[in-house]
Image 1 (tube, rainbow, N blue to C red):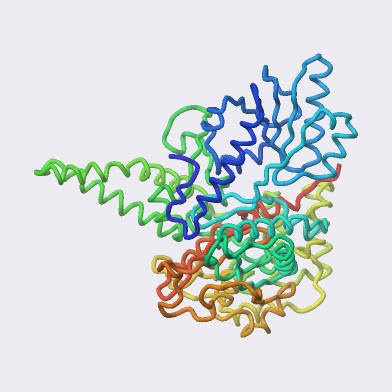
Image 2 (tube, rainbow, N blue to C red):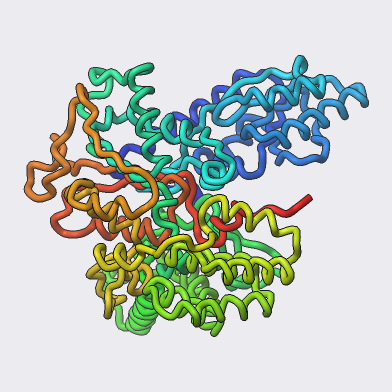
Length: 592
């Protein structure tokens, strides 16, 4: 199965966005004559794999390499670097060129920055005295679609950059990507933003439209009705909780990267010692599309039911009389590889979900979210530290404690900080400082308003039926993500009716209609046939998470979009798909 997702059923023509990027990349490579070696920075190669098959690149006569400190071993006369604007990469490139010069190897060098060139990076090439030997250009890849309703801006560190380093360049990137979408699908007339970064992106987007306007005559009727921008900082509770959907749990335990997960071949029933297998996970896989957004307990039941049905069909094959009955049976057999894949994955996941440590962690998360028995939680975290459980797990619960309790009492804060450094090493002082600077781990200065937020937005849903989804709370078995509750409100009635609650959450909020732009039907009225686009399709709401979104939140949004009476399709865009561990890891640094 291809890792590149099939985008045929996308509510928005994301296939055209992918094909445009694909064409630009192929053209820039074709423009360089002669034998070429393409050297890609490893993280970027994952993004590139979502827009073009490796086989297509090889058909262009390319040798492919990953960028590292080691010199590039190739006979090619042209070396093309495809890299993000990262200073360390410039050192690698400079050392490669200097190595070639020392061996009297003559080559042409090209550096393509993704998505745009950086003065600081070029400065390093100048300092290393290789800038004049390099042709510097750009490959403007601002987004990739990992699936038919998801767009990723591939900005791993945007949350840390904004909250800790004060570097807001990622916000320009987000606005630029949205503006690129507007050139394809028309100007978005309504904008609702919550959080410092989101309000800033809305402002940058308006300036871009003034400086480089989208001509409505070129794109026709706008396809996206409303843009909802939300800072991750507004809701740091949700990513710190363990996701309980099928796709969410795969990400929690196995880490999904660029629409695929890598596991030992033995997990997939292939006995090859030490071999890894890459398993693509996107909507091209029909069974995965059917189960990805379900609570994991339900997925196990669904797989068991399907396996039983197939077994019964197999038993009945002996009595099959007609060719058409035989044909139906063979059609069912075609889904066997998908069945085997997901039974193997689900079985592997149960080895994690059945552990007492995981169940205890879920209990603690639930206790913290419900804002009860903080003392028990504090003792549990203390015990985790003494047992030296993975630091990310400890920090994840600690951040959840701090965010729901508006910080830790000073005495506990100082004590836990000392215990962490003694147990895990003083080099982690930078990580703790980063979390403090970001406001995720802090001393309590005033009473928490979490109880008010939780009660008003009905974040805790008692007796959630995991098999019959009546509310978005099923994705966390009883906790409805704050982020999704806010988006629900933004879609149905805008910010105005909930201004009192918005003021209790971090950052400013904004609701604006961009004047002078044609608009599709009003987002303020969700019912009635008039809300569709002219050709009968539903209008689209683009939801953008700045700082990352979890798979469970994506599942909750898909659930909202599928509800009867919902007149809008949702496209989810994000700086990066994250979970609690990967988000915490972006703040982790060691001394020296």
